[in-house]
Image (cartoon, rainbow, N blue to C red; front, side):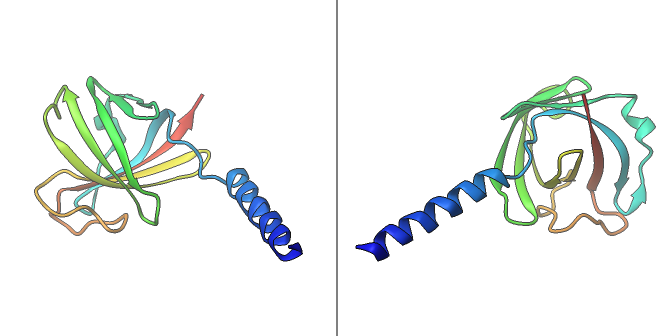
Length: 136
């Protein structure tokens, strides 16, 4: 009987610890600080000062709006982005991401290729890597 009580206590502590150290949320406002496309620098000035706004399931960036779904948080975390209006309407963009309290990095597959597996792209690939910082 004591063994079951001890196992229950250990399990409860483990669950409490996991909740306390949960991954930061994606929801919030993010401004691009650097980017690269196909292994080449992509000036953030091309984003014309746009801010990425994320809720728990929607996004908005420079007139492009839609939803996103986190598929896995195992590194690299994976998401699918579903454009609903704007330049990406009707598209599904496979992506990877990593997030901390103040930084978000997303690797977008903009071409017909496979989902990125790392935050780097070879020259000529249609993979856009954007580093964002959280804005309040």
